[in-house]
Length: 191
Image (cartoon, rainbow, N blue to C red; front, side):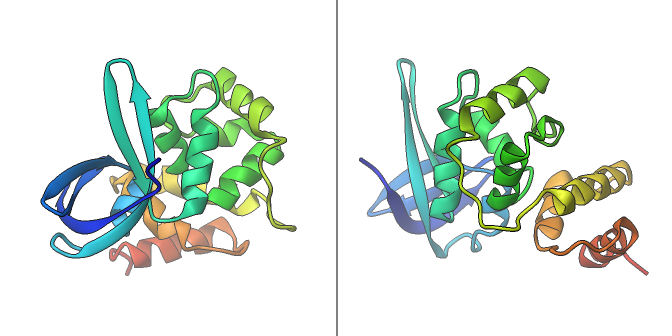
């Protein structure tokens, strides 16, 4: 029914934004990764949307790419995983890395999401392992290293959404020490 929305970003919050289109302001819930890549307030953006309808509420969720939207829809189809939890999973890492974690049955990786325990992570793996398709050669090694770096930086007081934004750009399999130095430089506090 509703696939995309294009309009001017008028407000940003911790987990949502308002997009104004034709005089209407739409409250769009999203993940940290999408929020951090939005243009400044007053500029136009386009988001791929999911309309969540339940008895007591109607909510709109939006993402920069169709890949994120499809992953959100798959996660939301798993029993016990609602939209807020699905957003938490999307904040773990990029979509191909989340798919790799599912295919490699890495419940420990999925439990890094807020609201995901071991049983829910295992349910996600069980229900989605035959639905996700991943480019050849993609694995979770870099993702596991990024999670270690995230824990170290969070312990130093950096905000997790800033850490994840910086780490999401890192590719390859450089050692954890190099990832940590690179992340500190990108966060603007390295010497």
